[in-house]
Amino acid sequence: MTTAEVDAVFLSHAHMDHSAYISFINREIPVYCGETTKIILQALGEIRATALEFNVEDVLFRSFRTGDSVTVDGLEIEPVHVDHSVPGAYGFIIHTSNGAVVYTGDFRAHGTKPEMTSDFVEKAKEADPVAVVTEATNMTGASISSEAEVKNKLNRIVGQTSGLVFADFAYADVDRLNSFYRTAKKNGRCLAISLRQAYMLKALRKDKHLKVPSLDDESILIFRKSKKRYRKWEKQVIEEHSGKIVDVFEVSKRQREIVLAMSFYDLEELVEINPKAGSCYVLSASEPFNEEMEIDFERLVNWLRHYGLPQYHVHVSGHIMPLQLRNILKEINARKVFPVHTEHADLFAKFMEDLKSKTVLVEKDKEYKI
Ligand SMILES: [Zn+2]
Ligand SMILES: [Zn+2]
Image (cartoon, rainbow, N blue to C red; front, side):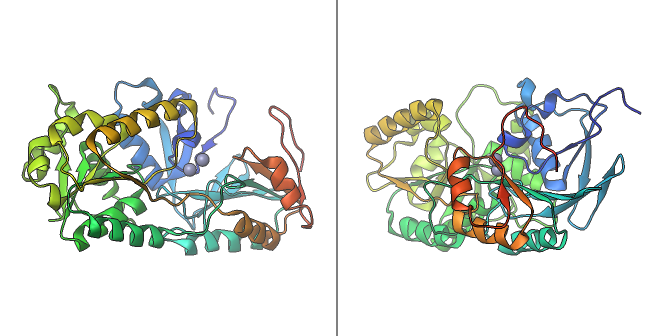
């Protein structure tokens, strides 16, 4: 018995809008999540050792895989994998005495593993649920694209570039990392990843189900930013992979041979790299969506202007598109649908109005009976 009021927490995936602040949890409460989510959160905890909100030390992680079923206080929870922009994402089917409740987590059908999402939809349908709690992120600005298309576009960009290619992408997005890695390799270049990405990649290699490039691969280099002191985990990567490390001076000399992973926060490195004419910047993440990001974006634009770097935006969303979502919900055919993870629940409700499932618009702090 624990002294806590909560029996367990279930994490669908490792994105911050779902898993941040798990650090503040009472250490007696078990946290159930996929094996990969645990690996990512623990690696992040080491990378961001000084940030309190990333500290997952002593968190009571209990990991599961698809096919497992977890029972908490008589309630059976069935995790089923889904495709998303971070590996190890799950949806849940909660078998209650009043019927099944399905939670989609964040998911999509246009990534590299759409069959995982199909498995989830199939299982959800079989459970004949009374309710589906669904993400509905992309109700505006939807598009038709795929990770495969992203890779093709990247290939065209890298193939035409005579100088250095800068690549800005989310460092736990393994699909995107693979797309850049394969594109670099195909074009006779190396992908130079950050120390942070290298550390994360090393951790993710522990998961045999994931396809991630090895740090020993000849097309992978590790970029070491210029700074006076390196953290413990950074020193570890530098020491273990000394033959792979490149600094600003080496990148500057080998511009035609490299695709350099670089984030908003590494822009000062451009001074020493001094990109040649004909280099370019590929933004391969979502566009700025909040005030803070807009300020950063403005800063990025100024740096790129200064160095004469054109910016390509090549990205595909981690979230399901509206028409696909509608078809999935129609197929699952639950009595009620609760849209969450959206700013457009009212639009969603009208878009789904003719389905047999009734959309319930949720309000904060209100209880809903099924
Ligand atoms: Zn997510
Ligand atoms: Zn999310």
